[in-house]
Length: 562
Image (cartoon, rainbow, N blue to C red; front, side, top):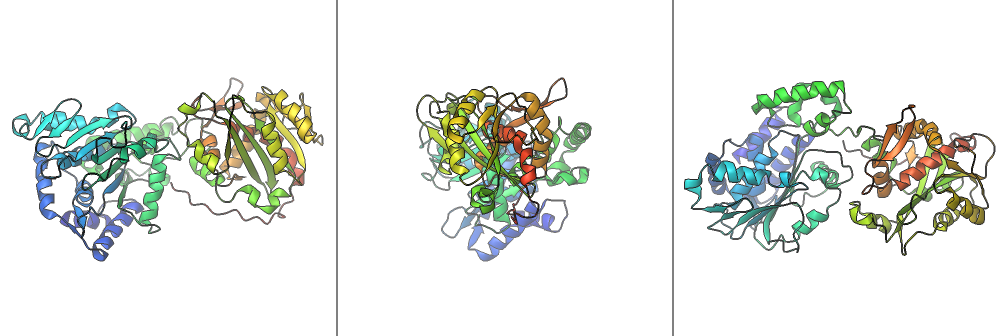
């Protein structure tokens, strides 16, 4: 218990600076020991920590704290109390060093569980094998005369000869859910995982060997709404007491954006910082470059300080703003939205891929956005997409369409159905597919296509569908950016709109005009965002119909996890 208490005392007595999540974790752990029938196997702890003699470094207090709780704390029935652990901390903290020791310890005869196989996963091979190679080169090869009696190893596997337990690394999921019947699975740098497919398959073999464990480690990164964000949200809910931990130990170290400028705060994200003066010097150099160019050098805030400010170079807006705009009830569930005049737009792009349509109402200065996407089942890009689009289909945000292409009239029929009893002021589409929309709107909505009219048409000439040129979107760009940054866009709890908006980057052409483009051309779609941008080119026509203060709509509050 001394290793747990020592670290908790340092945090709770503020001997070192720490984030609120660290304090919450210490209080949670101490309370759990008081209220539950759990114990630490201290004899096993001593034997495990005796293995430090084979390493070039000794464990830090935070590492001993995590190891004892994750690997040596048991319930009355003999099961591990915290079999799962999230290690979320800034770059340079020593995550891989911790994994190296923990895996070597659990692989050793001290563990005593036969066939306690360990599998390490990451998106890149260098990450997957970092800890593996550290143990192979710095522990086993350096202590070969002593350890060759107990281990066999090569460049792909390390095996304990006594328990027949093995350690391997992978960059893809096992072929079957048996997956080698692992005792423990590691997932490194989960911030790059856009979905949990690999994790779900890799974890599928757990439970066939005693004391199954999971370890997720990561700094923060650029991917939003992915695996790491989900784990962070679960971890924080546990620490706030909003949900049961279900065996997960959330060890989370980070900083807030307004804390970065004080170097004494950096230990809040990098708990090993005081032990590494060279690292502190490097962080200081990184910090100076970050202050000179916070966009291009954003890795300091995102990865060193675990403070993803959400503003990537050329990003549309911050992730926090996207979260705030995509929350709450669906707009069509708000009665006032279904009464007001509206505009719409369709992004056809390729009829054998994705098509999106949006309807916008303006009420008390807030743009209420209804969205629907149609996905061609034969789209060649579906295999590249990591986004769980089938979940969006289940939620009613998208629809799968059989056949080789999506009928052009589907979006317009949806618009007609959604706007019954409403006045449609105008519509918009890009000129690449404008003939599709022109024919359909004339036949279905009775609106003619004003093909030569530009966007941002503020006059009285309503009832038309306009095509958008790049210059039209450039004129609307300030309104679009301002609305998102001020969180004046309301899409409801739409996972696909969060994805769309987060996949857009802003670029500046040689004339200084703003354009909206995909961050990545194949695996990231932007159709819903582009339809929203198109609709915003004619949205100024709604301003004269927006009666200030008449909506009486109270937007739901949203918790933004930074």
